[in-house]
Every structure is written in C-alpha cells, then in structure tokens.
Length: 149
Image 1 (cartoon, one colour):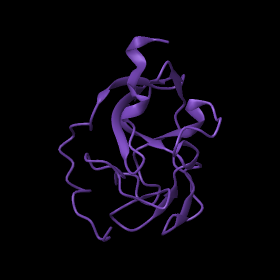
Image 2 (cartoon, rainbow, N blue to C red; image 1 turned 120 degrees about the vertical axis):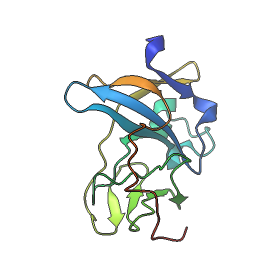
Image 3 (cartoon, helix red, strand yellow; image 1 turned 30 degrees about the horizontal axis):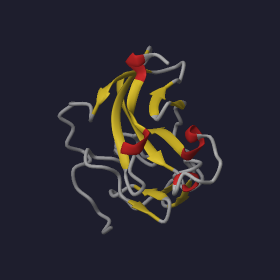
Image 4 (tube, rainbow, N blue to C red; image 1 turned 90 degrees about the vertical axis):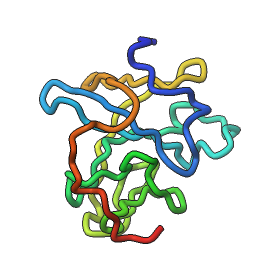
C-alpha cells in the first residue's frame, strides 16, 4: 500500500460516527470525505473482508451540495444511517442512498478504500489523500442545525 494514502487505523473508525478527511482530484481541488463503519462492521466477526465493513463518501449532502454531513466533529448517525443535521436527510451508511428527506433516492458519491494490516487506505484512482480534518474554507453555510439528534 502507498503510505501517502493512509487515512487511519481500522480500530479508530467509530461505529456511531465518521472519520473526516480531505482529498483532492484533478478538477475540483480539495474536498472533504468521510469514512464510516457499516452494518457489516459491527463486531468484525461476520467473515467479511475488512474493507467491506467500511464505506467512504464525499462529505456533501445531495439535497444542497454545499451542506456538509460531518461538520468537523463526526456525522450524526441513527440506526445505521448518516443524518444531515441541516434538513434531516438520512443516508444508508452501506449504500449511500438517501432513504428519507428532500433528496430521497439520491446517492452520496463513493470513494474506494482498502484495509491492509489493520490500516485504511484511500485507493480510489480519482482522488488523492490530503490529510485529516475539514477543509478550511471559512464557509459558515452549514454551521447551524435544523434537526434534533
């Protein structure tokens, strides 16, 4: 594995929130992505390959794509779904499908990750890992929530 594409240790991926990191691509520059444990990854004993117990998505709601799902302290989750705190959209952590809310039926944009020796790496040919944490863009558009979690 390419050490420059290391996101985090598998054991550091929470089961009730997300890991936020930055990626870059050729067209859009630096963007945010989130890593989430899926329903397959609850106890690690289901026989699934480790990377099948994770999902990785660009950190933007499909209703209004300037709204971030993880605002910097982990995305809220409820029953295996990511919750957009701004307007209440729910996204299935496994598939990225919006199952409830104004963008119902839309999908989050996925990124490919691989687990090797207990470490999660970004292996998507369209993106390169930049670093942990949010993009510092002074964007205050997603700072308030309309949904109680």
